Structures are given as structure tokens and as C-alpha cells.
Image 1 (cartoon, one colour):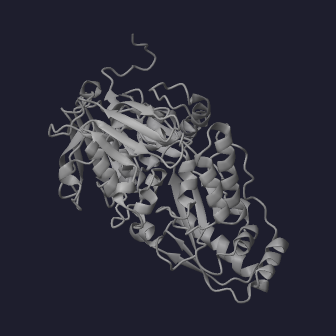
Image 2 (spheres, rainbow, N blue to C red; image 1 turned 135 degrees about the vertical axis):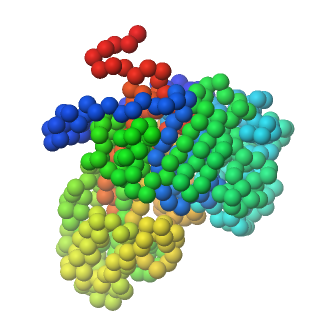
Image 3 (cartoon, rainbow, N blue to C red; image 1 turned 120 degrees about the vertical axis):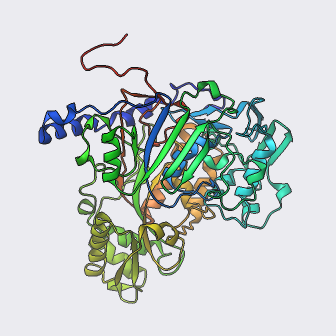
Length: 546
């Protein structure tokens, strides 16, 4: 990736477009028309009442507005309204676009970055946005007492890892506000992906009044983004246009409403009535009057199971390999749109990795014997932790049956409610869990960083010196050489039975693109609200508007 970043949409289009072209929208429309009749597609939805307002449905659930504690994809979408870092995502390519920073310089050794913050950048109350607001926010992210989920993303910065783990000093961390509008960052090694990483909301600034606040739902965050929170309750959030946003003239929406829905039926009803112009989250497609808004596209996301390898006996990779070789992969992955045998979506230019597809019981049993557990004798109960979903139950049952009946390993399935599941993955009372992970930025590193020894996202408690060596080596590389090293690291994860990929996850949205401008299908399924607007005229079927 080039160091000189610009908002050009062309540089990453070769592989981005290939992903976007893997698109199921037309087949879905055709199927719906065949089964339900073409008249179902002809029911018009009421036009929007106002041309400067947009209402979106989100699935209800626990909401976290403090981006230091957030990990959910739905919150990342909300954050595009109220937070903005040095860079932001291009709405189509997901490339970094200059945001709060208008200029930056990189030292000759490519480790020191100097950012100049826009003179006109302000918070919603008119206070100027300063370099210190970034420095203080980033230090609060890596505060060892906070244990922020994404704090390990800062480990690319000199001294950040030691400080985050409580073994280093703040003065040794390479983050300095050298002037009111100048932020200097020193990296541990050249990192070609650094601008892309800075698009992530965890690198946002924080208003001085909010740094020590612990409940941002009661004390609403002070926004530096294109919108600010003007109303909020358990039913939803209303955002108003931020008059002090530096690029205010480019923001066409004056009001943005997030409506929390309890189920897909409620979301469908809001779409049919014309209240909601975009459904993000749960939806009952069968109840939609107008199916033309269905948007499905490939996404940089993978659903997988993982084996926790921190404690005996599962810290022996021979046992994890045996688990993988005993599984009926084809049956496990059936009924998935995009069955996955690798962790990282096979993007063009990324080296081919040999996925998990082979079943070999003889080799699996031999590995158990080599590890000292012939026919599974002596192995403790293996606990598979899942959510209460039908597919999770189906897959866990197939795994349990294979490991018990074929390898002699005692297995128990532990079902945890959705609201408690993600927090429970940090406990040490299970052995196999599952996640669906969406890349934080369009780079393979965003998946592999989760397996680094000291990563806060390392729920698998993965600890492998060979993997660490590869990841460290990749930090000083660029281009195809770097991707080759990352592919080698991914191959190691697969070969040593750390991760069991199930499927690549498609993104599903309901939105009328003949009506909404500035919304694009993309590989991260993040759609910055800044760019959205409602067209002044909807095209009449069969009539070309000029």
C-alpha cells in the first residue's frame, strides 16, 4: 500500500470489485418473483416525508456508545455518525480517506508519522479539535486498568504493548501532541496498513469532558463527527447534523433516526409503511411488500470455531489436529452460502492457503496415540460453547458425535444466551467456541491479529512462537512479500488445528438504492452516514430522468 493516501476510489478496486461482483441480489429477486408472483414487487412504498431525514432500523440489544468498550459491528455503524479519526472509510472501497487530518508526513525509516489536524475541526459544542484530544483518547484506550477490547490494535505503536500490559511507562509510548494541531506517532516498525487501521473507531479522539466518564449512555458523548445525539431512549436514537463539523457543507441529511426493533417482523412493517428507508439487522423477508431493496454481497467476514489452546491437554497441537481430521467437513458446512475452508476470504493477490477439508480417521487416531491418549483414553471432557441458534446446535452436535464416537473423547455442549455469549468467551470454562468476525479494515492482518499472544481479542488464548515470529516479520514487509508471510501465518493456524472455518458471511441489507444516494455495498458492510442523502426525485419505472 502506498504511503501517500488520497480519496481515490480506484487503487483498491481490482480485488474489491471482484468481491462485490459476487452478488446474489438478482437471483433472490427472481426467486421471490417466481414463488410469490410479480405483483409482489410492484407494490410501491410511501415516499419519504422529508428529503433531509433518514430512518434506519437496528436490532435491539445492549448498546455501548463508549468506543473504548465496543466490539459489535452494529455499534461501528452508529459510530460513523458521531466519531471521526484522522482517517475515515471511503464508502465504496473502504480505503482510508483524509478526515480530521489534512496532511501527514512519514520519516525516512517509515516509522514516525506526523499528522496535521484541520484548523476548522471542532466538537459539537464548538471546542476546537486538538492533537491532545487524540493523544489522551489513545492513552485511555491502552490504559492497563481499562482492558479495552481493541487496545491491542495500538501495539504497532512504540511502547504501547508494554504500557498496556502494565510493565512500561507512559513516557515511553510513541504518541505525542507536539503542538495544538500536530500529532506525532512512532511505530515499532514500518506498517503499510497503518492509515487503514486509523479508520477504525478505536482511534477516534475524545472530548476532554468525556475521557474519565464511564457511562456514555447517561452522559452522551460529545461528537466530532458529522452528527450528534439530540434524543435517545430505549426505542432509538435521533442524531442531528453537527453545525461545527469541518465538512458540514457535504452532509445533506439534517436528521438521522435509529429505530431499535425487537424482531424481523417489526423491521419489515416499518419498511412496508415507508417509515424506515434502510433495514440494518434482523428482517423477515417473507413479510416485505417490496423486495427490490434486498442487497446481498460478499463481505470480508468469516464464521469459524476455535480451540482454546492455553491449557493442557489442548495446548498440544497434535490433539487439535486430530479434532480437525475427525470432522465431516462437507456435512458441517452444508446450507451455507459460502462454505469456507480458510480463515481469510481468498482475495486476489493473497497467496493460496490450503484449507481444512480432509477427513482422515486413521491419522487422527494415530495423533491421539502419539500425544499419549490412545483411543481418547485419559482425555478430559471437551466443552463446546455455542449460542442458542439452530445452526450452532447442528454443527456442535456433528462435532460432538465425531469426537466421541470416532475418537473416544467425552464431549459436552454448553448453550449460553446471546446476551451473555461474547463475554463468556473470555472465561476459562470451555474448550471450543465460535465467532463471526468482520474485518476491521480491508487487510488480512485484521483477522490474524486476533491470534497474537498478547492481543485482547485472543479469546482462543493462542500462544505459538512460530506464529509470533511470522507476524513480527510481516510488520517490516510490504506488498506481496508481506502477504506471503501473513498467508504462512494463516496456514500455521489451520494446520495446527487452532481454527475451524465454517463459512464466509454475506452482508444482507434492505435499502432502496433508487432513492438513497451515498450508500454502497462494500466488503466491510460499513456505510458512513456522512455520504448518505435522499434523491430529490425517484425514477418512474420505464422513464429516464435527465
